Image (cartoon, one colour):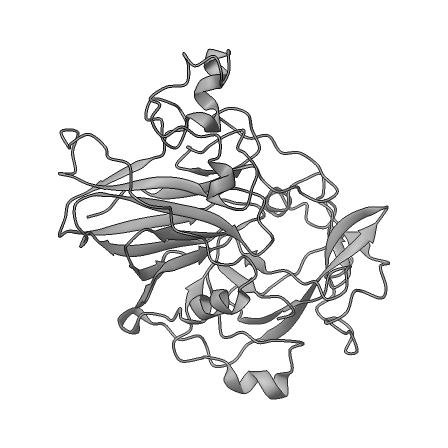
Length: 386
């Protein structure tokens, strides 16, 4: 059986609805995570559930008549003090009904722009069977990490005693200042005539430590193409491109750069320019972006040269060609600080051949690449200094 897709969204908003994009020198931590459009707004900021719920009342059904909480009825229905325990508020968690003994396919997608998230279901394990729309060799996990742009399918067996269980989604990869989002897995008969919802017993699952990178690596490294659908990559590539991502200062603002070049978008969108034959005038067509970075660049230290440039140049690839791309993570502007970065490619899948730590060394790393059953993905994760 298949549940509706579960989308996880970070939101900066004071009401349910579209979130507006804001320009920041450095993005702040999101105050809210939404699961299928639901979350707790105006949350008490704190890294643990106890500080989050210090103002919550597990016995209330609605906060509207409680003047001690707020006098604005519309605002009151959105407040975190009303949820996740208040079933009549807009903050009430999403409920997924299941029948004991059945197996469900849960599709999970992350539309975050910054945060790495972790999904865990109280008292249940999950079997990962698909990643980014491609079958993978099944493997069992207690929880999954999901990065910006990624999607997974997991199988969940409703093999526990009939009750309700927490589904928890928390932030990882950077020190969290966002409370976990909560949904409920409810055992019933799977329809509207199910018994009244009983809140889960006990504490919601705790998100793994935000800086436990080894745990994240273990999950990511476990993903392999499914044997009976595997299509190995070609034996050789036409060209190789090295992409070094760094954090730089440009005009007093933080800018992310690739090979010391920061993207500026042309007035005419790229695809429109190519469609109308304007590619030689709509953007800088004098050459490609740099396809490598200096051989003596130390990825373990902050950038020594912050003289990054801006460009709207592109890489031009032969149709049907095979390109070997090395994604290199590096230190940020602060000493000994490097973050996990997901790389997402629109409109294409690619083979993820392998991962490594430190600067890529063809002599040392090429031999360990997986050319037999690498997963097809549209998002690749590069770990700190990896």
